[in-house]
Length: 272
Ligand SMILES: Cc1cc2nc3c(=O)[nH]c(=O)nc-3n(C[C@H](O)[C@H](O)[C@H](O)COP(=O)(O)O)c2cc1C
Image (cartoon, rainbow, N blue to C red; front, side):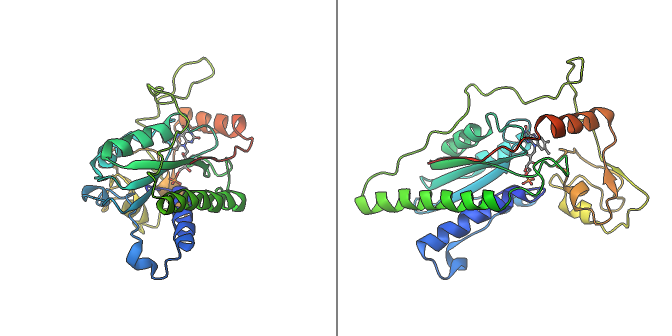
């Protein structure tokens, strides 16, 4: 299961699932694997329930150092019934702060047994240069290694007949506040009300309206918003003619600051 507005979380979660099912030796993958992409609003209106024999691999991007708050209600509605879970967060090379521990806590609240966790890095949604093209080949090698570790942990315990241990992941409780960017004078830059604009070059293909995770872009008039914008940047990064953009000065400064301050490559962290 994943939420992935710009595709990086999807790549990591599907990479782990693919390697895990290769290790298990599943041939007819469709019989055993169920992919739930809950990026779109209509998918988040369905109920999802697991059984004790399932393994869930679930990933969300890090927004403001936490699990995206618009997803909390949906994530808390998943019914675990004692299934095993692997929690994954993907962040844009700044930090994942308390997102991984928060996701693990939500899964436990749902009734899952969380046996592994990971924080991977994906190209930052705001930028075309920060963590560019990640997860890359090196990241995907670690994805495979992580899947091997999960396989060994589960397989060995099943053979030995022991309970599979739950995992400790990095993070602080109580969780820190949502990360808020600051201007040069130290004042908070609030980008919550910022909305994307549309250039005249828009070809009205409606892709942005179809992929908006909040269903907020008006289908009849794609320059209008009918709901909230979470700044996921799906409409910006996926527009075939580059017609969507943000021009709010505080947002642009924050993006520029991130690109400079967090230029140095960070590496994924895995826990099992
Ligand atoms: C609203 C918003 C807030 C974000 N906050 C953070 C953050 O706190 N730390 C960080 O390193 N990356 C942050 N990012 C970057 C995303 O975590 C990163 O781009 C991720 O790869 C996006 O996942 P996706 O491609 O699956 O949508 C943020 C992105 C958005 C859209």
